[in-house]
Image (cartoon, rainbow, N blue to C red; front, top):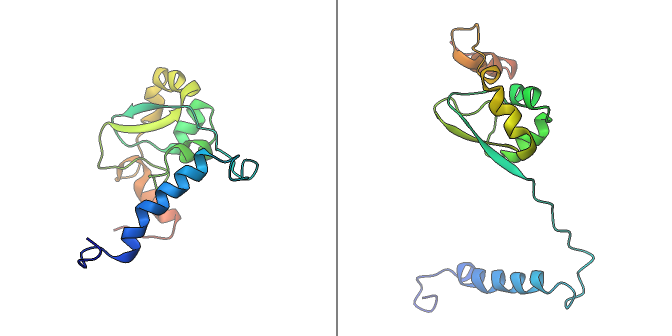
Length: 132
């Protein structure tokens, strides 16, 4: 495909480079890099289905986990709140804290006193964005 001009050069080199990296990674001792490559520990996480938006600070406080840990498990979240438009959101939480959170689910759904539910307005105003 590359010879016919349908595939860019960098694209055609991608697969062989990826395969080479996999061979090196799986044979670290052979290539003399066993002490250089650290395999990160996997965080054991479970899913908590939240039916409406929740604040990650509240999740951290109720579960006893740190806010940073909750954020690390959910890198797709750019804010400290689950997406307001998504119902039944699958939030990753530490496995050891999942049961605690399920038992105390009501504490996660604290409504905001502001006209905008779940402190969305307050969160954005803290960052300097004014909502009308």
